[in-house]
Length: 152
Image 1 (cartoon, one colour):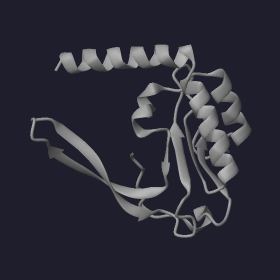
Image 2: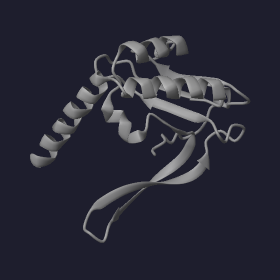
Image 3: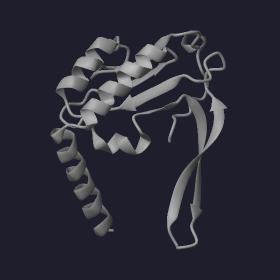
């Protein structure tokens, strides 16, 4: 899984115990307050997640990582991620949620070490991914990728 690598973690973003950090949520201009978790949950119930972000899993441990590229024995070029440890030393098991929507631009990046928030967001994401609309979007995304690869 991929995790964004910030150059430094500002002090106000250090998680303690059971905190939620909303780095971005909703279609906002730089400097605007992000939407609430409730807004994200409503959006997850009404709009389709973008399958483009499924390759990152929509959720991962909030750890630094490094891309490692290599050729396999069968000639495929692959990218893997080496885990370099937690971003937040006080919250080594914090989870980062990252994604956007297929039918509306309202990206989100939320990190939390609150088990209840993690459980609710994982359930909402799973429910969204189980819808016919998500399956349709996933087929469209795969077709777009297939056509893009064929055009090279």
